[in-house]
Image 1 (tube, helix red, strand yellow):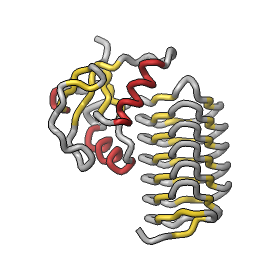
Image 2 (tube, one colour):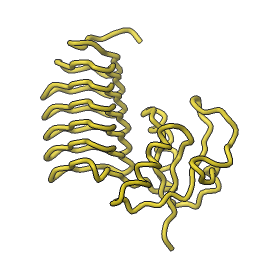
Image 3 (cartoon, helix red, strand yellow):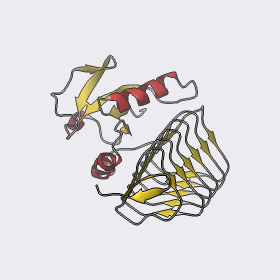
Image 4 (cartoon, one colour):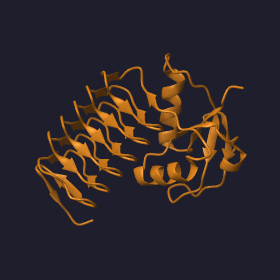
Length: 210
C-alpha cells in the first residue's frame, strides 16, 4: 500500500510547499491533505479545507505516513519534528529548479526551494529549510532545524550549527562558525565567528540585545 503524504500547517509556508510539490513536474509526491496543530502562531479552530484539500488532526493521520513541515519558524519546526519523528516519516525535498552538486548530504525532512545552489561536499542536516535562491558553497555544514532565508550566501568551509536562523540576503564569509541557536538579521555581512545564542545583524554584523 502506497504511503500517503501530508503537509503539516495551514499557513503561507504550507501553501508554498504545496504549490512547489504540485507544479514540480519531477516531484513524486501527491498531497493527500493538510495537518492542523494549534500553536502560538495559529490558534484558530480546525479549518475544514485548505488549498481545496481536507485538513486533519494529527491523531487522525496513519502512523508512518509521510509529512512535510509547512512551518517557517525553525524553532517550532524543530519541536514538532522531534515530537513526531518516531511515528511518521519526513521525506527530504529538493526542487528540480535547484542545483545540488556531487557528494552533498541532505538529511530527512530538509526542504530546498527553487533556485538554490548547493556546492560540492556540503552537508545539510535534518529538518532544515533552504529558501529560494540561496547559495551554499563547498564544504559547508549546516546543523539540524536551521533556516537559511531567501538569497542568503554561505561561503565555503563554513559551519552553521543547529537551530540557527540566517536572514534574507545575508552573506556568511568563508571558514566561519555560527554557533547553535543564533539569529542573524537580514542583509547582514558575517565576518567573524558567532557565539551560541547570539542575535547579530549589520555590515559588518555585530551582536545586539534581543
